Length: 285
Image (tube, rainbow, N blue to C red; front, side, top):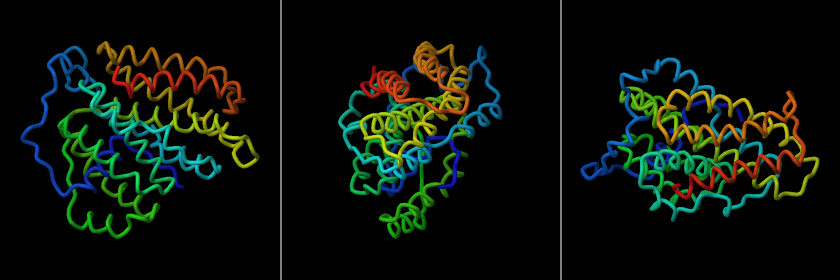
């Protein structure tokens, strides 16, 4: 699949819209005052919009790594996805934004493996979190018709989703909520890495899947970009803690050779560290 780069807020918003012709925004939850540091600009931390947009655009959407997982004949495993029942645990904007990203990666996982029967429940969760965060989305009837026409075709569905990016991206930029986008980016990227490392660790190693060592090793670069993005908002205590957790993963990646070839022992250690952070996020801690 052609490599695509876009803010990972996209998949959850887009697929949510595909399953809903409209929504009632009259009862949306307001963000707690104490939780707005990473959402709005303040005089103490001005972030150049162009700089952050550039950093976000350098983070691959999980479709790429998950497509490599699929092509390597690693079996689909529903148990590694974030259960839809966890949504009720997310009460603060940090958890809502991160897990909106997590569910976006889970949606990418089911689309990649053509598990289309799984999409409905995860789209409802993504829609709820997006609504809670006051993130608008909207799709015209033509878009809905195309989705309904191609809903069982992976490539066409993926293309329909990506074709809506410009509208969603413009909405986020206009509302100046790059802090939320940064958290969603992090959640989606981390979940994509977790899905890949967890299922690969559990799989038999064969000539067909040995290339995944290089694919997962190559995530070191994206990890560095994620940390760089979050550091623009490090005055937020929650994000500062998240950065420290990500740097623990970085320390393990630093042991991987420059050509991104890791061994099984390194894979296991990275998976353990990724899983620890990912589980904290999906539990809403």
